[in-house]
Length: 390
Image (cartoon, rainbow, N blue to C red; front, side, top):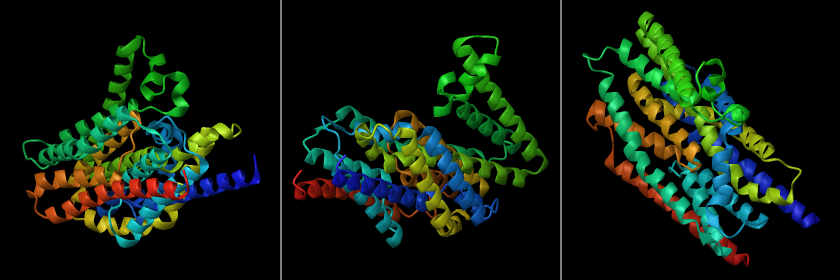
């Protein structure tokens, strides 16, 4: 490899690390535990420490799916060169940094996706229509599905005819069953999921065994939460919020690391000595450092907004956030954590307060900012490669 090319690879790697740092420092690193901090279930510094560890774990064990989609699935017919990768990462990280500094809700998924497509088209690539339909469906359905689930949960939890020592454990049991079916890289040799790994100890085969393990884990989680809320309702609710925050933080690392390291994957064809796992590890470290160095300030700020939610509305917000993030990981679709969480907050707010405190103007500006993020990143990516003589 020529020295000039090697230098470009180093610049691309540094840009990727910066992107990962921005993700960890931004809302993806701050949002998952903000409800728990607002509900006084955990301190700000401890939350920042845990969100970094959990984001790192999610990036390493589940980050490959979205990374492959960002690196190879958004444009057909071409592979991004080193210069294109650098342009994508600098545009994505730069716009995110501007958003963090100014307070505007710049969405990472929209900026990186727009930049990759813009650069790819400038290089002569063809539209990946099937992937665009999948990505567009997730982006459009996220507010509807996430807000709808949050609305339903927030509508049920405070009802006097639905005892919370029953509703909360049922909800926890469902989450536990979902966790049993999450796919992890390190479990690939035994089926990829906790349920598949547990099939060996169940005396039946196939789907029945997987269902039995999933149900068993769900029942175990439900029983544990039932015992906890039975002896201390408010304390049990806070601890359940903390557990959900941990799952959302893990899912954030899994879904967002691909936006930082995905563009690097095509370059590995020229660097066979570097494995994709090493790239995911680097992205996970970047998210961890970003969470530890800059997330505390954002967690404290966001938690002040979440403090008014209370533990029940926080639960209604975090459950759909976890489910949608993991659906995106399963499909390999880059998704905005801002979009996921904002839609869930709005849905729970409509159920509890009838929309009071939900500003249509602020929501409108947020949606416009998301759309502008994508269009601006696309234009900058296409224009940058045009100027560079692509």
